[in-house]
Structure formats: structure tokens, C-alpha cells
Image 1: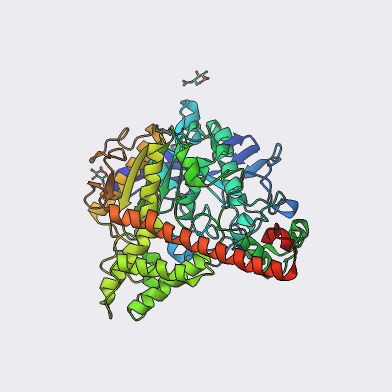
Image 2: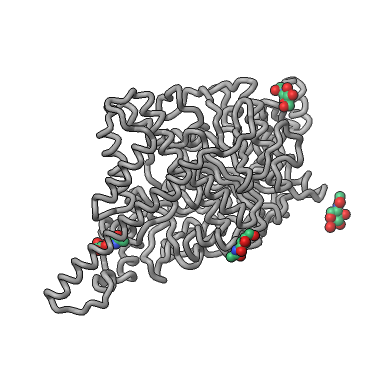
Length: 587
Ligand SMILES: *[C@@H]1O[C@H](CO)[C@@H](O)[C@H](O)[C@H]1NC(C)=O
Ligand SMILES: *[C@@H]1O[C@H](CO)[C@@H](O)[C@H](O)[C@H]1NC(C)=O
Ligand SMILES: *[C@@H]1O[C@H](CO)[C@@H](O)[C@H](O)[C@H]1NC(C)=O
Ligand SMILES: *[C@@H]1O[C@H](CO)[C@@H](O)[C@H](O)[C@H]1NC(C)=O
């Protein structure tokens, strides 16, 4: 088999025969911005080989610097008649030095790429060769991947698109978008609305649409995909009116717009961060002038909790309300989480003495930090009900039992139940919906945290079969035959979904993936072996989507009542006017 592959490679590439290396030919494409030259590589998928044309580091909008910092992206002027090299990734966007990064980038491909505020570049992976596709008038389906990393870290270079492109016979795209302070700061006024990172993603979608045909791609079959904050980004793009008619659908992995971490809770976060960066002016224009004069690298290290905001334009209103208005009707939607996404938050605490008091403390601190209750009793109610629901109530607990339960709770609350809710709302709203849980336990040694036996698939594991990370790096972890087959099956479902809007149509699949419906609630359990299962955790679903939000609502109401009554007292004392809101008073 290997010999056959190599002969195949010689025929195609003429000169160099080592798989994964450059071929003699250099593909040239004329884009709307000018000509680019990429590189042709021979790719070994572990199950065959072929060529992929890579185009990396294509600027898709003007550099977001100077007056364009904290502004929506503007069209790139292009590069005239010169041929632009597109062989290297563009710089990463300035970002947090995140502990997560070494874990995400198992592929070890991007650690040495520099960072620069001029970072809005995208990458394309075209199977079979652009010249071949063009000569045959082919138009391949396109999968555009949006990376994760808390809206504050990561890059389009995180994963290599070669294997998915070649095996799936689809064009794979990845893009950088602005992160953290530079991507999501908002004054809450027209001067700086926020969501620049989402506008960047949207501009990349438009660029891909306008240029799809030049690469042998089909502008009408663009499927978004992404993990974690990238999964939530997929949803944000799907519900935004700006993308109406531009995309076929999306694949949200381990992150949806309904997750409790997907939206900023108030503008205060931005304003507080501006203040602590030394730009606490009350007039938005002065604040922006100050922030635009700051060093981008320093700003990128400021704050760890940046998120999109409801800006009235890109996101016109609350995402749940948008979904209830059927804004995703007609789109194709695949959504899911891993069996143990929540271990990303529990494993770091696994060594800490496993007591009820400790659990209560962690849950209460989470609630205080997240919802900023001024009335502590709401946070206590949130914490007590949570640890009771998940049985974290015996003192002392068996450490492993505690880890298992706490991981389940975090997985449910932050990833699993938001995915279930998103499947329900999208399906009722008219999107053709497929749901999964990834449960496979890869035994790889590079997991960021030591793995407990009860923990199977972790937070970033979906990208592993999706991009064939271990097929590409057999030195890191050598897959079993079953795992290899599962990974190939996952890529087949994904490619079928992108090509035909249905994971079962196209390349033959062994297990039929039923559509998700509110009445059947069937989902695919992606494991060795893969099985179709029915969602039967309605109590935990209601706990995450009804009970905890109700506690939060009551807590916020108590806070508001308290704020009003103390303001009333103050106003009476000073005899000042009552009508003004705290913000207008501050300004
Ligand atoms: C390649 O995949 C096919 C279908 O999944 C399988 O039958 C075959 O054994 C695989 N070949 C290798 C070399 O892994
Ligand atoms: C490709 O499309 C063009 C324009 O539609 C047409 O002129 C040409 O004959 C087609 N070539 C093939 C091989 O189908
Ligand atoms: C925002 O901050 C101000 C002052 O720091 C405070 O009075 C107000 O309650 C905060 N609003 C929210 C929604 O947290
Ligand atoms: C959304 O679709 C559902 C199911 O088809 C329908 O009952 C509902 O009226 C629609 N809502 C809106 C706001 O169009």
C-alpha cells in the first residue's frame, strides 16, 4: 500500500517524493484582490495520499490598525499586478499567553509564528489541485473553521486542513479574527460597538464567497465549523442577519451561543478593563483616543473574559429571541459536545482536598464572578442547589467520585445542555439539525492534565478526528484501528454534511445519523463503536436551563431592588433628581 502511494506521489509531483513535502508545481490563483501563489504538497492521510494546494496568509481586509482599531473591518485595496506569496501563515493576532495553548496545538505547528496587530489573514486547503478543479469546472463544498480560545487566544494556524480537505474532497478554510480587548472592547455607544472579532469572521465568509470559484469552490456551499468559542462563533454567524443567504449552515462543537459564557453580561467589563489599562475617561471619544495610543501587545494581555455583546446590529437582540424567531430556518446545523468537556475546569482542581465546603466555595465564587451578584444569598443558592443536584454532598468524598460528578456538572452546565438547547431551538425554528456527543477516549499522552479513568473525551478533542491531528502526527499518538476508523467516519459525516447538507448522503457511512427532532431527541454517540442514542437526561436539562437561570434572575432582581432603594435614600438625602440612570449620572 505504502509503495503504491509513493508511486502515485511521484506521478503527481514529479520531483519530490516524500509524503507531506513540497511538489514542484506552484499553484497560482487570481483573487478579487490580486494574484497569489501558494504551494502544492503531497499529503499522506494514513489511508492513502494525494495532493493539496495550500494558500496561507492571505489578507482578507485592511489591517485593523490605527483608526481601524476598535472599528469594523474595511475592504483590502489589493496588491495590483504583483503576485503575492501565500505560503506562510500570517502573524497571530495579539493574544493572551494562555495556558490552554499548548493543549490546543497538539500539532506543534504554530508555536513559532509571530504576533502582530496586522493579523487578519486566512488560509485555504484545496484538494486535487486548483488547476485540475478549474479545468473540470468543479465546484467543491467549503468548510470554514473558526478557532476557539475564549475569544482571547488561538489562530487560524491552529490546525492543518490537509487531511480533511483531501479525504473529504472539500476546500478547508481557516481565518484569524481579532481577539480579547482588541476584538471585543465596547463603549456601548456608536463610537465603538464591539464584536470586531465577529465582524472579521463575517468578512472572511464574504471573501470566501467572492473568491470561491477561483479556487474551484462552490460559493453556495459554505459550511462554518468551530470549537469552543469557535463553536459559539459559528452560532453567532448563523443568527446574524448580516450572513443571511451567505452560508449553508454550521457545525458547533463544544460551544454554542446559548452557553452561559458566550455573551458579555454588561458593558461594565469593557469599561473596567479600559480603566485598568489607564484609559478611564468618561467620554467615549477620549477613552478611544487613549486606547488607540496604547501598545497592542499590552492591551491583548488585559482582561481574560472578553466576549461578544448584543450590539443591536450584528447581534440585534438576545440570541434566544432570535432563534425563537426562526432566523436559522432553512440552514443545516450540526451541534454537540464531548462527554467530558467540563474536565477543563475540574482537572486543575483535582488535587484539592475533596470536601463539600470546597465544592460550595468553588460554585459560589463562580456565581459571584459570573453574575456579579451584590446580594450574596443568590450565589449561595446557586452553589447549594448545584452541589445538591450533582450529589457533591458527602464529606469527605472519594476524590475520584467527586471528580466524576463535578466534571459531569461542569460539562452539563457549560457545554452539554447548551448544545441540547441549541439543537431544540434550531430544530423547532426550521433548521435541519443533527446532534452528537463525542465520547471516544484517546489514550494520548499529551493531554494537558493527567487524565482520570472516568474522563473520556475532553474539551478540545473534537478537533482531533476533525483535522486528523494524530494521523498527521503518529509520533505523538498512534491510533488503534478502531480509533482510525472512527476518525475517518467522523470526517466522512462532516464532509457529507458540507457537500450535501446531510451526514449520511455522499460517501457511504456505516451507521445512519438520524436527524434531531424535539420528539425523538436522537443523537449520535461518536465512540468505538458509534451508536445512536436518545437524550434521556431531562431533569439535568431542566436544572441547567430553567432552575439555575431562575435563581440568577431572582438574584439580579434582588440586586436591582437593593440598588434602587439605596439610591432612593441617597437621592432623598441630597434632594437631587431621581430620574437619571447610574450611567448618565457617571457621564
Ligand atoms: C483505508 O480505509 C478503508 C476504508 O475505511 C479500509 O478498508 C482500509 O483497510 C484502510 N487502509 C489502510 C491502509 O488503513
Ligand atoms: C466549463 O465551463 C465553461 C463556462 O461555463 C464552459 O465553456 C466549458 O466548456 C466547461 N468545461 C468543461 C470541461 O465542462
Ligand atoms: C456597573 O458599574 C457601576 C459602577 O461601577 C455600578 O454602579 C453598576 O451597578 C454596574 N452595573 C452592572 C450591570 O454591573
Ligand atoms: C417559527 O416556526 C415555528 C414552527 O414552524 C412556528 O410555529 C412559529 O410560529 C414560527 N415563529 C415565528 C416567529 O415565525
